Image (cartoon, rainbow, N blue to C red; front, top):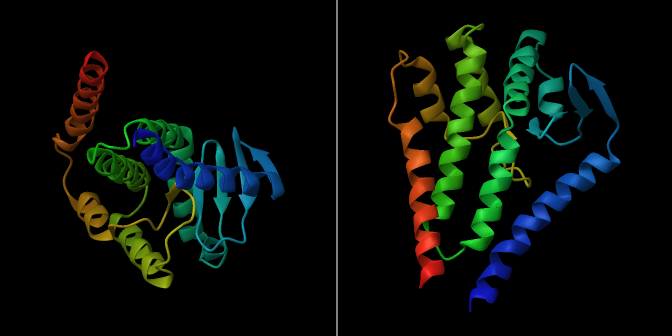
Length: 193
């Protein structure tokens, strides 16, 4: 049963990462400022490792909005958010039977979005950035086929609320490490049994 579950979880995860690698291979890539840049025919912009895909949606924006989206994706690339997701995908494959794995990945993606948004609004107008988020989410609500960060990733309401909050020490930053510790302990306990 474990092997069957492993296969059911592993196939879509590995397929999405394989599609990403194929997209990188067939794309025209330029290198600038320590990152690889790809003008993508995909609708949405996203980042993966040190690759930033500039989608058609961004190319159609005003220059100042393009700059905001690019800054957001640069934060994901420079902070290694794709490595976190890859690590969680590997854990999800091994611990497929733990319902918390899906929650961990969702929380990690949300946290990454909050971090990227917070970094951008340090230098940008919060309200203009919020309007940009709303514009891009309503323009195209289709989800990405890749397990990565897209600028227009939802839940948009939470992202805008986080942008407009005054900075405080959030429990959210302590939840993920705690959950990872619990997962580690549970995995160790399974090994002992």
